[in-house]
Image (tube, rainbow, N blue to C red; front, side, top):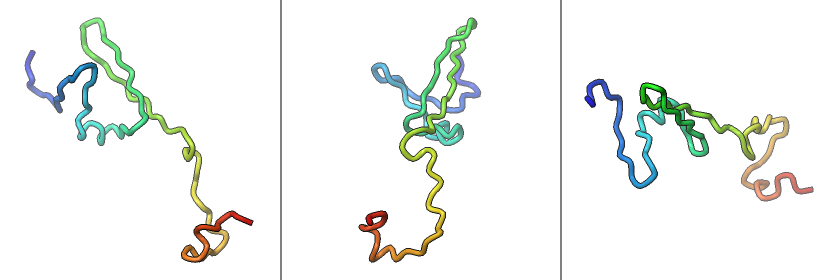
Length: 81
């Protein structure tokens, strides 16, 4: 097998393989994302990235700013009546 035209390489350690940083950045792979592995008939390995963009803050759009606050004085009391 030739390494001609290879984008990146990584080594397998035990049952784990690292994804090179350049590949992670290019494909926007982040913690919690899933990888789906498939071996094609010609023994080509295909990996699909499944973006995991759910969780506690996944639908949080941020504070809309309709109230002015003094963060220095109010940060511990925000939302407490």
